[in-house]
Length: 253
Image 1: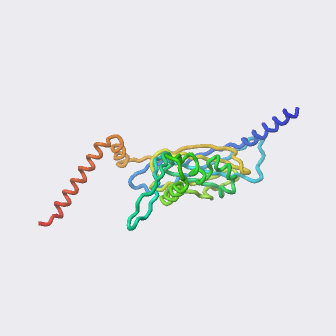
Image 2 (image 1 turned 90 degrees about the vertical axis):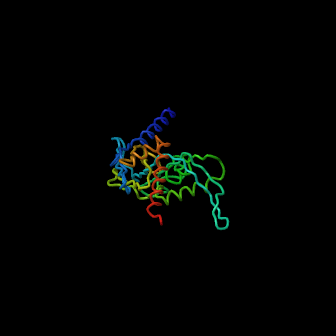
Image 3 (image 1 turned 60 degrees about the horizontal axis):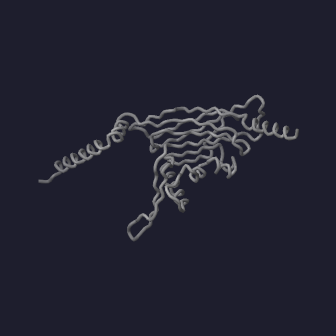
């Protein structure tokens, strides 16, 4: 009997823990990039729904939005000054690193949940960079290279973290704005939304959007990808032609 009661209590706890559900939507699922593109924002709207048996939580909710861009092969090199020149000393390769990362939260992530849960569930920019998302091409002392990668990508505006990037419009409705700089690469972007209460994850949902090149830029990209040899030869021929033309125009007799 005691075992049955314990199982019922455990089942009831699990049901309550999953009683909230997330509903999210993006303002745009397809962003077009042309020659005049200087960056944009995509808004994430969300609502928290509770079933009839779930009472309101006294501590309220927290939201973390994590945006990952297309994967790319990245190499970080360590340089050392030798006299008047800089030389490469060591390097670390990250074959599957996200080209873009943005983490937005309703308040500082350290206040939302525990360090153990952040590392296990990859919550927050630091936890993601130190996770398997950044698979290494070789072993060794990789932490300095991870730190350098984070610093370089942050300087490019491609690795971002906003501790107040999620705003609750009501206790159950929230909004976040995803900043996409002009340097954001084209491709598919994943948007993960995680709901917290009392340091525990209650629900997660995922949606997507795409950055797409259009017009002349798209045609050049398609030719460079599908007809790489012809593209290279044509580029070289154009460079030689302009070089010859410039030398002819500015030639001194």
